[in-house]
Amino acid sequence: MATMSDPLPADLRDTLERGLDALGLDMALAEPLLAYLGLLDRWNRTYNLTAIRDPRDMVTLHLLDSLAMHPHVAGIDTLADLGTGPGLPGIPLSIVFPSLQVTLVESNGKKARFLREAVRKLALGNARVIESRAEAVDEPGAYAAITARALATLPDIVAVGGHLLAPGGRLLAMKGVRPDDEIAALPAGWRVETIHPLAVPGLAAERHLVVVERVA
Image (cartoon, rainbow, N blue to C red):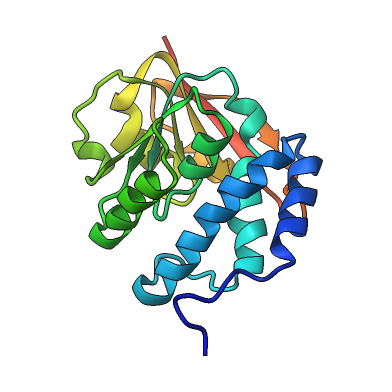
């Protein structure tokens, strides 16, 4: 039976480095990303932060899946990750982009405790945690972008987090298959700017990044 001190499988670094290379990212990022993964794996055994239990699956379905959106985050200075859970995609993105100020928004107490510990242990000076529901975050217009990986439908994300966007800001919504029904249900005043197909190394399933803007 696994114990809290078990190391990560030895082959994880190779898998992660191959994925980083495929995404055009520096392989030196493997070290802090694996430190995050190790912390998540240890906490997950006790606190059930994610349904994905195997660290090998976490590399693909958590780390590389989160980082597939990185070209569309470059150049953004402030990002709120709504319903971040154990910090996805916010923590991997904060590791890749040290100049990106990331706010991790999570209402679940045990997940928020893990996030605070991860930010402290990984010395992520560009990340902070808000333990709250997204709609209750009182920072109107504070962010150049908001993102959500598994929170809700596009209309729901706009409803709970749209107030956080600065003028000209964007919702960067991570989705699986192209969510045409959700796009059609966007409320008045919001529209899809573009949809980027994403390629996640080691994953055959469809992934899309839907960029939503407020209509002037």
